[in-house]
Image (cartoon, rainbow, N blue to C red; front, side, top):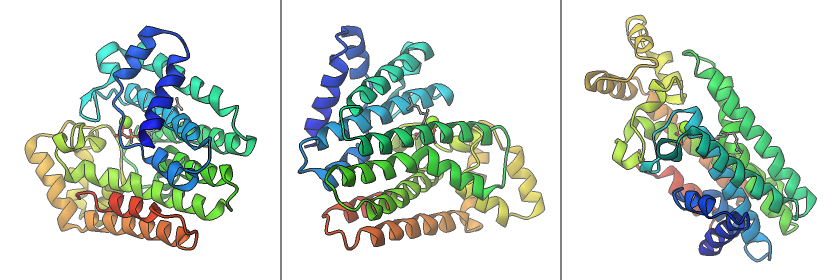
Length: 298
Ligand code: FPP
Ligand code: MG
């Protein structure tokens, strides 16, 4: 059914009737389609499930096009980003097209579903703003980090699960709780992989978050655990493109302080909360999504 989602996304974009836009859209790599998978697992039997999944993935793709401009990212999912290939203006406009075509289709779905998704897009944008502001300087504000990752990442995953339940008339609360915790765990795992994986595996530069000014959870935990001298060393590396020795220093301190292990534990406990939320819903396959995501190579 994921193929039907891809096909529907292509058709929605093609309905604009512009060959250049279709060609640009073809250059956007597709990713894991996590949000679509959730929607299909929860509401797969409904005739509008594929449409809803396609809309959410178009909105998500639009947000990443804009995010790569904001982050000056040159690669996305292992290939040159749209902004790197065609410039920021094109990437922003392609994002606007995917986003507004998605919204046009969303208007035809039940209003509760449309409200759930559109509310999440506002949160997504707020989360990106919070991320940009938090990235201006090193910080130690775990509450601000939690709020930002909820808005930036978890809100649309939560909304995908909730909207799918609303589409099929299931009580949506357990699905929303599942999606929220899965989304939070997803971002924490992403922040961990930035430190533990090489750039080839990540499809983007490794150890890039701190260089981009992002004080992610492992860094918050690490700072807490360092002595005064090492705290000063860490601060001197904030926002800096790291030398190989500096990269090794961060990776070693992440392990010896227990910061990485603590972040992994946190991701696992969020995953556990997600699993508990849907235990009684009887929907198959949602547990596998959590387990596969948590068990990605740390
Ligand atoms: C990736 O974060 C970014 C997001 C998940 C959300 C981006 C949201 C917006 C730009 C606002 C909404 C815009 C539209 C058009 C709906 P990251 O930079 O931490 O992850 P990365 O390493 O994958 O880039
Ligand atoms: Mg980014």
